[in-house]
Length: 134
Length: 134
Image 1 (cartoon, chains in turn red, purple):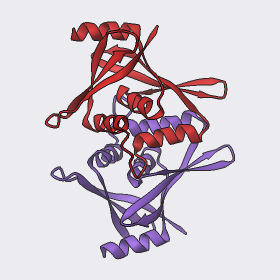
Image 2 (tube, helix red, strand yellow; image 1 turned 90 degrees about the horizontal axis):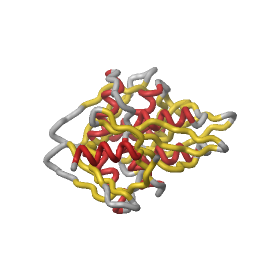
Image 3 (cartoon, chains in turn brown, blue; image 1 turned 90 degrees about the vertical axis):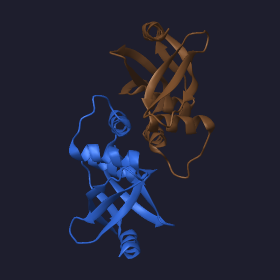
Image 4 (tube, chains in turn green, blue; image 1 turned 120 degrees about the vertical axis):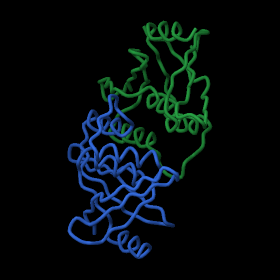
């Protein structure tokens, strides 16, 4: 089962290389952090703030490739957590097919924010993640 | 007219945010530098060295999206230089169509290195770039 979550906070720490994004349930109280790189955090932060870049950045390029090749990003999922590492997928609708493409959660979230599509997290991932951080 | 060039050097300067990649003609002597960000330079450098990441990085994700949506990256072009800014495109073959997608040269070169496709630069861009730096 998947639960819809949303990006709640981006915590950028300029002294460290590892940054934190916080996901929280849309219809609930549970939340958990994901550690990502500074580049990815900055990219997500720009998107959330609506800062336009004069030139397409890498996540804009992913979105453009999906669009121009006839796909439509339906949503992103965080479907696994193993050894403290999260695994994610883009789910792209093309004609009658649903194409799933593996990616890092930071890329998935950056694309979800760009394309304004939902973020779903597997129930068992939430349970383990919340357990890890409670 | 487009001239095939290749990535000749990546100069990573850990003190500065701006890094330099050097392109050089495949069948000639002309070369010119392009200034890119540290993230992009690191990404290209990893690809050139063949360092495998355990998880797909953002440029791997672009390549996977193109592939899974039925496209094939044919080549990348650097087609314009305005106000010291380079403009690039991915050229993707899909069925009988050639789809061009705008991107930054750093993304184009990272993808060319990943997918092992040629890099072409417009003759007038080379003339201007070489003039700028000679």
